[in-house]
Amino acid sequence: MWRGRLREEMHRSRKSFKAILNDAVRAAIKPKSQLLPKLLPPVSMGVMTGIDPSRFTNFADELEVDAYRRLANPGKGKTQ
Image (cartoon, rainbow, N blue to C red):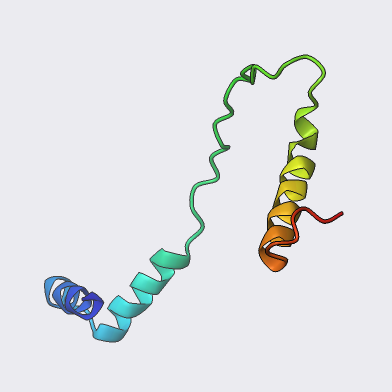
């Protein structure tokens, strides 16, 4: 796999294995360009009036707790 590529590069460039390996490591850890991420324009979520989208995670957490309780206590129904 990677050894074959390093050996090919070694023969192609006529450098030592150590030099090729160091070049590969340097290239891998070199910081990528400092481009700013592309920001997308805001889009309406189509949420109904009176529904707070920031509370969706709380609602999801409550559903997860209810599902866990049903699995942990089968046959007992919903426990409060």
